[in-house]
Each structure stands twice: as C-alpha cells, then as structure tokens.
Length: 456
Image 1 (tube, rainbow, N blue to C red):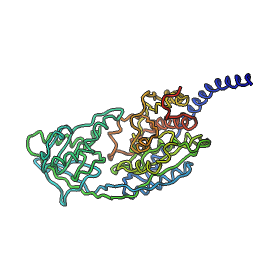
Image 2: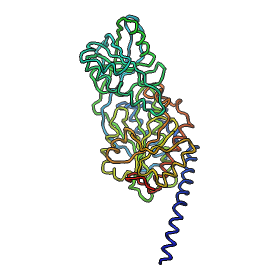
Image 3: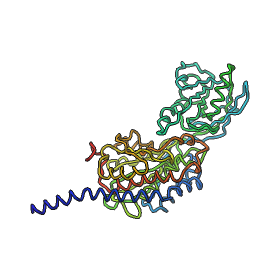
Image 4: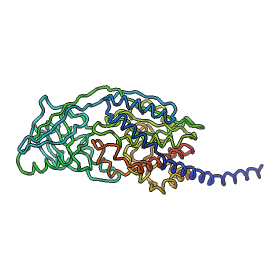
C-alpha cells in the first residue's frame, strides 16, 4: 500500500505540469481557430444590416430581440430565452439649432437623452460660454438666469478610455448644474475625440431644460463668436417624449456544461444602441465578440462549466443590468466569473483578472496563449467590469476585463459615424481570440476567481 501511495503521488506530481501543458496547447488551438473564424463579423454585419439602430422604446428593439433569439439558436446555443423588464425610454424628435445673432448660421446638434423639449416654437436666448466645465461649476446660483449655458471643453484622446470617465460628467450632470444656476438650456461640446461635424449623443441626468451636444467644430465656432465681444444668441428647437415604462428584453443563450453545469460563466454585450448610426461598435461589436467567442470555446466540444451569453437590452438608457441582477440574485454564488464587451472592436492590449485566479495553471496558460497576439497580463485586478454586470459584481460575482484600444472609439460612438465600415475584421478577430481562449480555459478548469489569495 505504501508503495502504491508513493507511486500515485509521483504520478499526480508528474501529471500536473503535463495537464498545464495540455491546457496551453488546447487554448492555443482555440486562439488560432478564432483568429481564422468569421463568426463575429457575420454577427455584427447581420445585426447592423437587418436591424440597424436600436434605441430602447423604438420598434427596432423588438426586431433586435427576435434577431438575438434567432441568432443564438442558429449558432447552436441552448436554453435560448428572453427575460423581459421595463425601463424608462427617452425618444428623440425634431431637433435644430442656429445662431440668430449677431452672425446667423446653423449649428449641428444632437439632443441628450433625458433632455426636455423646448417650448412650442423653440427657445431663443443669449449664450453664456465656458471653455471648461469647472468654470460653469464656479458660477453662483442665479448667475445664468435666462441664458443657454455652453461648455466647450474638449475631451482628450487616450488609449485606455480613461479620458471618457474624466469627461462624461460634462454631459451627464452638466444640464442639471446649468439649471441650478438658472440656465434655460444647455449645450456641450460632444464627449468625443473626433473633429468631424457629427455630434455625439448620450444620456444626461433629467434637468427640466433642453440639452444637446454640439459637434466639435460648432463648439469651436461658438468660442470664436463669443470672443468677438458681442452677445451671441442661439435658437433651439427640440421635441422629445418619454415612455415611463417601455418594454425591454435581455436575450440569453447557453452552452451547458458537461460536468459542472451549475457553475456558470456570464459574458455578453448590449443589444440596444443610440439612434444616429447603426450601433456597430457600440455595441454590436460587443455582442458579436462574446457570442462568437463562447461558440468557439464551447462547440462542438462541450465545456465542463456552462457558458452563458447575455445580450443586454437597455444599457444606453439604463435598466438592463439591474434587471438581470435582480432576476439572478440567487445564482450569484454559482457564477464563476462575469465579463462584458463594450468598447468597440479595437484590439485587446492588456488583460486584467481577479487576483484569486491569477496564478492558477489555467490562467498561466491563458497568459502564455495571448502573449503572442500582443496581450500582457496585468497583476492588478480590474477596477471596473462594465455597467451591465455591475449588479452582479456588487452582489459578489468576480469579473475580468480585457482592455481594448480606445484610441478611435470616441471618434465614433453615439454618433452617425458608428457604422459597420469602422470595424477592422482583423482587429475584431484578435479580440475574439482573446475572449475565446479565456472562456475555454475558465470553463474547462477548476480555477476559483474568488480565492482570497492568488493560487500557486
């Protein structure tokens, strides 16, 4: 018996590195398969061509729901179903803006989500222009009474999207801050790194005043006009309506695990979009990346753990992540890890994993697999996983984050330029390869991302 025990122990020690080598080899095969696979491109091409823009509250979201169900079934997913919920929806109407004095000319705008409409016939008022958002915040209550506040601060370009987090308050809370100081309207330079005359929309806090994004060139034009020392008057015409409880849907499909089906890896992107473009990079790409990666990682072989893809139905105007979190609160303890793709189709250039699983053999195999395609592993865990998985994270689910190159993302998102031609198929395939490699290894190992300390 002692001899047998010694033999068994020696065999297990020898098997451990062999198993790790097998995992690495298998993951490399999944990576290479993904690099040559066109499923993600086919998915995003289909979504943007057959559905187009998908704002919540519009008939297109019903088509998107049906498209999502049909797509998951056609790709071989199981337990395909729809999880309905309701959410507030802001619907855009007619919009126009112009300088009426002293030098009349048209302005390019897009109303911000939650903007109030102008009075019948429009709103005409003098502008109060601020070159920084802080300059607006420095104004005392009542200082902007009867004026249209204009903030023209430019968002800087960064690779890691950090500038968006630093700038987005100019759009989200700017209207409310302007209203608190007496403003009757609010215009903000688009939260964008583009130099085109296409403005970028996005959600703002309800403020009770008309609020819109200016194209970057129009924001700079207002700066030049204001610098001439004469009062500048602008006329806004904006109509919109709000649906208090619009129908919305999270679309779900799974590849059930063969050994531990109750252990679930949750991934996805958001199915909805803003209305100016066709929602290709925001977030048709995310839907395509996660759906294609799960299929490549899980079929035709079946993973040990369950892979679940969620197409969240209302990220832009909010509600889908909270609805999913409520519906699955009793399942959080069984969620192995969650991840969301919502940064377009730029190449992955870094990966961040929960600290507990970072040094597990499967994750070391993952690091080795993605290093040749330009992805280093960060030692720090992710600080943020995505808005639609935030409720899961808050409830205790671990998350991972694959940082994509956002250098051009904010040239495009929330604008009429968010269209399929902006996606590079080779870049898209690299992203899918990273996701597929990770999903394969996480689903076919015993890695515990909740471990208190990195496993050795």
